[in-house]
Length: 250
Length: 250
DNA sequence: ATGAGCTTTCCGTACTGCGGAAAGATTGGC
DNA sequence: GCCAATCTTTCCGCAGTACGGAAAGCTCAT
Image (cartoon, rainbow over all chains, first blue to last red; front, side, top):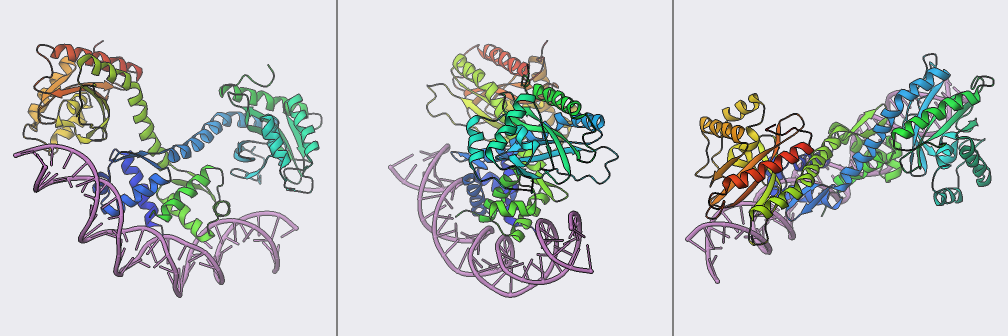
């Protein structure tokens, strides 16, 4: 059973987008009663989904914001996808992309190698920035006030090895800024090592990170951490450039 | 009184756009009961406002289409606005822009001169393509099959002087193609003369038209029709170029 | 096999959303 | 200025929709 009022709300939005902009035009086109149409239009307007000029309605900021959030995400993943494939091939481990949303990271997508038969898919998963390399790679390149505010708030201990001491986290953030990447062992998930590097937007703020992760017992292979990290940083530099940034190390 | 179900639908959409993508995440974030949240998500998904991959939701095509319709309209009007002002100044009459929507035109905006104190604002008004110069300027530069289909359908007689004979309309369309513009007297509205020219997109199809209109008793001034038409065509050529088109007459 | 956590479905019922009608507002013709 | 036409807004009685607690179902880790 679906909700008729929501269906009608969407029908009215589509009708307005199609160019029928007054109460009576929308009522005629949708077949809804005038009073019903007026009430739906008013509800959508008060919620910001429609705006009203005199007696005519048009699509409002709330709808535009929905798509902006979605389109930005789709663009970033599209740009990153070939790089994720390249990283997965080069390292023979899972490569992934996560973006900053509020004080959390959200996984946008990942690419596994063919021999990773039972790899967990983190796509859509959301977790705090301090949870591991993926989040701290981003946090290190956020405005100072934002970092201070985040570290002043209570930090959740996701696993036994979660680092929640602000000073210890600051040390890690310094490391990210110095070398351009961060590796964490067993923090994001038990038995998983993660190497991550930040992706920058035009303004120089980190908005996402790219990472490679694998089981700690085999990843990274002996003496190959720097190699993986260099591959990673090279890819994030390219992606950042596409987004209008000059790269971390000029 | 507004409609709670529609408000909740929009709240759920905003929550998904913010990165909370599963039923339980959305329920927790919004404070809605699990069953309620599940039903709202399902309704939005069936209407195309959300899409679902496994147990995660994201913004769907219906919402993206809403904004596309709106954004395209806003872009075109923004581009045309300075030209409308220039035309209004040059002719001392009202200049306007209308776009093609289905088999109709919809007025996007108009600019009146200061001495037009009681001019009617057609913004948002929708009417068939054959209603006058504004629509026929567009129809003349649509694909042949589309013109045939339109002229084969019953045509509404909006006013006494409406031309609804397909052969007579085809003659007018030929005229538009020959000279680049069309003038009609008393057809769009009683006592109003309209001069219109088409605006082209990148592919060479007319998607909108620019027009100047005024009371028939004074517009256009004696022997100045060609002058007004030339101003108009010049402006539509510039706008079309911005949209990626080479112009009607190379 | 079992427990935890999440999703889906059920179902009794309260109150939300509905629409016809009336009141109000605007516009244009005379 | 008056009046008719048309559109918008508001009212209100009521039918049935949407609600949410609870249970059933599913998935995954141990």
